[in-house]
Image (cartoon, rainbow, N blue to C red; front, top):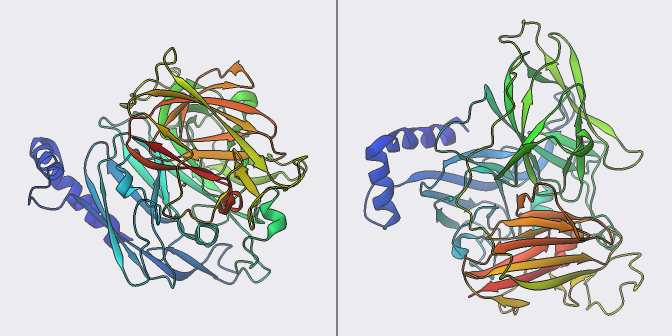
Length: 468
Ligand code: C2O
Ligand code: CU
């Protein structure tokens, strides 16, 4: 990790300032300049300690030998080159979740690139247009590869630093572990696939069970929450604190407190909050996840050190983050399109009509596995046009629906306007509900749209939108 981070920092400092901008510009044109910010990422098996030193270590698949993978920090608009080497015994790819990048860099095997075979490498190159909180994970054998630990945070810094005392990432992962701390087998069991998906028994924060996260009275923290669970939806409550949401899925929003003080975070979703540490020195405050009835647990505690507050609590409310260069959909001229989410257990219609091996469908079509070349897009969108897409959940289960290559505005839920019309790339659609989102189809290519509950994705809740 020091090697990895060190290289990035060195490159970055070289690229700072006017000279840096010139270098970055020439790189974008493919000139023979020095390499841009360069990272190397190896997907490999490793043993890590997830559940504490006193317990056995866990066999995982991960990036750079660590869980989560190394945090990759990029600067908005600056080109990056990431060499991914596959030291697993099966094919992989990396998907840069939420980054609006060229389709050839999107990491979907068979659709946007050939899979990276064991022993081979693939070079990803892009310049992230948006500052915010993103993450990376494989898009091959996704249920197992993500479930065995392949995931990392991808943070794109704003051009001007944001005024906070600390910037912290919490990668939240969910594992199903056996008594000897090994990853339980049984990925893809069809009962689970037709229900809520593989929900585990152990939630880690940055790769370990966390009892305390140290904080200091008076500090203002930007906390980036990333749910990288296979299936677990989270609803986080910070005892004694009032987090203010400033960004959803990497896109700034009007700062606001979450409804009922709970931060709802489906798989693959990210929320940045500003947390003013107004608790008492020496005290601990629970962070609770109580999404599932009767199964609430504390994720960790905010543990204040004994030191006195280093400043009076800030009176001023957090400011909005600078906007990203997202095209605003023209709702007056938008075409509309409906996607029906279908299937699963207790759907009424049962699982009838699904093709072999499929449990779920979108508009009657099941695309399973990781997708394959030659699968026809469900619709072709005209490049540059605005679209309103309605997702109608006809099932009894929650679906975090993710669109590659674009961010969309969440307009309405069950016909009612959403208060902050926040941007997202993954929207949680509750059972039997309807969500309308809008975006400009400005990024040409074939883009996946799928549920991010991995069991659901691999058993049919996936499709392709073409932008041409
Ligand atoms: Cu985060 Cu298609 O995925
Ligand atoms: Cu789903």
